[in-house]
Image (tube, rainbow, N blue to C red; front, side):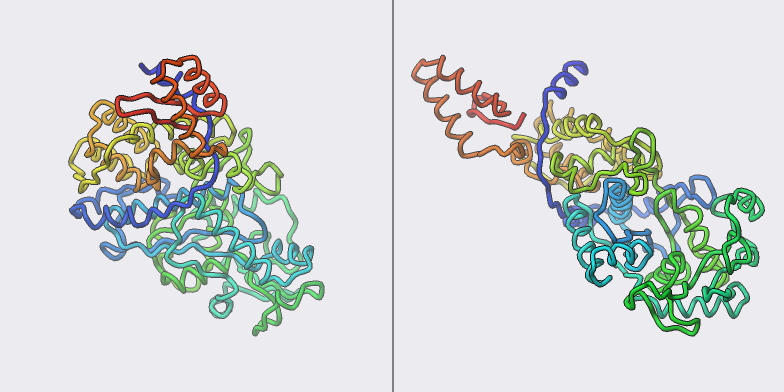
Length: 498
């Protein structure tokens, strides 16, 4: 049976086009309707980069979660590597809410940066015009992938006063110094805890440096808090300050936005594994340097999306924009492709892997097709739901949760039960999946004209009733050549896109 299923899957061809799926209402309806098992708050386990182990998640305020994720630097279109972290933390956000937590999810926008300034100059436009254009494009892409908007989306340029206040505090405490070139730098060696996130001492990190001390820096590990303005930079990249005209360094931006949105101490901070050092290490140093005490309790880092085992990035030129991929694959397929790998693992992007994900997703929709869906109140003690929850409570193990969806699909193929269909659909909703009408999803893509297909099916049916089976077979073949698969049932003929 497994071989037969794989053979059937290999015959399925892609659907294309975007989907704009707002799954929030489905997730919220599940949270409202299911009994809130308080023990579930103690069941969730998270791998904490800071401790390098899996820990039981205990929020600072019972029933509430503050989560900050480093967002996009908006100088260009998002690529599929960006989709990796956006989807990973979207699912974490959804699962925390499904578990009954009230989540304040903050994902920032970096709208002042060297790359932004360079691109604005290249295009001959003000920085704010460029960042407004790229922010709108980012939102279009995230909507197409079914990514829920965060609770708050702060912009760096809106928090410069908070950054300057933090820099002044660090200088007053002797942790920051002004250099001869006008920059203000953080003195890494004066912060005793530096290196605790990366797991290396300052001397180990210093030994790994391959660059000379930059002008104005006391140590290569020191990092800039405030960049002095340059004559070559446009006026809209400069702010007045007690340190002179300039702009903030990248690291201080996130610390200031974290504090403004979630306070000096909060639950979860996330981002790509490449941000662990130096960005997140520097965030800890400047945040805890300004306000002694813990900054973040749990640090989460997602693995890379690779191309031929090398990280996808614009600097390497091995990237594909989300928009380019959505011309060939629908958004839910791309989302499903990401969720088949654990958020902390690295994996490769390829057409073959996307084709496999598309065929697998279609099998789930095929199980739902033709069944009345009864969305019951989820009983988390029921074996399938309990297995799904156990997977997600185990450090957001989406591959394990997806495996449960396929077990449910097998149940549904046998039972054709509205209740089984409802459970499959409701569990899918917690991952942002399976919320489209099954028949519409299976018929979408390929530029097919549904009216023309219906007319051809009617012609075929008339030919069969007249005993003209040659014409009926010819119509069936014509439709097959267009990528239409017919299904004859006692209730009539239906079709799906191949």
